[in-house]
Image (cartoon, rainbow, N blue to C red; front, side, top):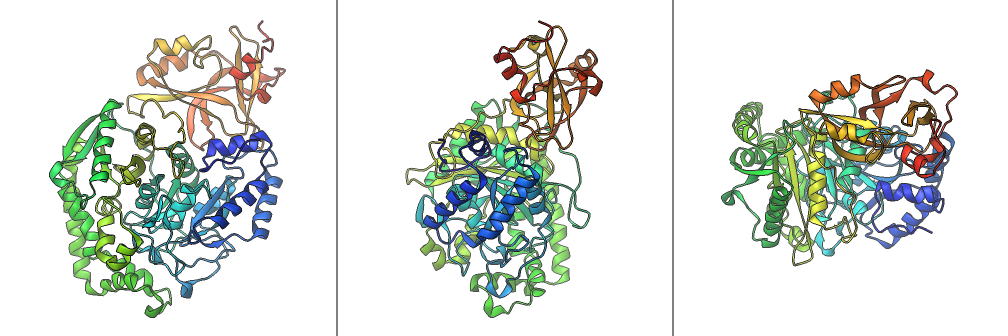
Length: 603
């Protein structure tokens, strides 16, 4: 019988379900036992048994076959400033508590993909803080040492993933709340381009800046979940709709901090981990270039030392919560909004535009920035003793992201001699969310520090190269797979293997009567199968058109939806081409069919 791993990721969970040893009900009971024995401050409200049972029953009615939806039976947690129908939303303030009747759109998308909410997680009250101690429901602790803070404001969400209570969790990020807790708990934090995920159903902190974020064990998981959660929302005024962008080259120019700009507040171990991350980036074949951090540092200061703090006051004033019901540190920050006028707000906007223009010099020489996620950490006792100063230090490298409209992925960078983790964050201009994934995966893998409490865990092999503007991806299904009869055609045009994966579950595979033997892939709406094993290759643009034009009927190229929800061009078959052909979907892929030594029609 397969054992429940200490930290859960999507491939491991799918394997558990595929084995037949585990069902959603069995899994959720096991996770409840873990939660009972774990940090009591992680959840504000756990989903009641009857609601879990109802969610499982609804899932099995809709999709009875295990793994037949992208997130079939996947347990996830939700930060308690994001609405889940039937569960209280408190924002860590009992006086604000209410039960929403509808899910936030992001939550609804994930439930539609098969995921099940296990509870609402703790946070710094009203998402104001980067440390995780500002809650009347307790202070979640670092999974590596309970003396230390977990990071915030998405404290419970990060600890839930790092301690194996959920496969992923939703957080939010205004100043770094979706990245700092990831670094302090050895997991991945996905901070999308602002507006990529709908923010409707999320209690705003700074409405013009807030993002819903994803905590996951691996970059691949986080990116897959982000793609399923994203989508333009016409009812969200800040929702953004734009295509994903690619970098101009496979080999990236990575901006790193100049020595004089590096501030770690005396934490030599985090400084060392940052140096190691830079070295790994070079070993991966990329180049590094030092950049001037000054415009980014000044932008970061605008968030709390400028008029944007008035946005927090604007959000708070409509809640009907008395000041005496608010955490003193949180109240002090929000009240600062009274110090700014409309004139100050305009001046702040003008200065932000000027700083963005100065930052353009950096983006002219660097594709990506590589930064420490947070310069240090603190004990809970120290943070409570000086909550404003120490909290501000946590956001030294995060506060500017949303003001500048950037996307970011925070990944583990290893452990210091003190046994505490550090992390780094990759930053890129808006809508480079997908383009950041391969580098982030590679850096996490190269760090060799596992994920969450599973420090020795093996991570999936990262994609071999990043996306670029001079290449296009192609999904191959049969004879062009690596090592198969026609793979030499791809090798001859300098194609490169990006990754092996599976299609979405509604694809069927047939054995065609061709020479050499080939399969035909057909999409069957409403069909719930295992998904078909495929490979994604990268082809030079010039060669792509020639290659596709030579594909013989009944095969052609169309958009194929993969298990992570992304759509990629690939080999499909005309419906007429499979009439009378044997269906081989049950094998799960062409290679498995060939390995089973089933006679082919052409043989």
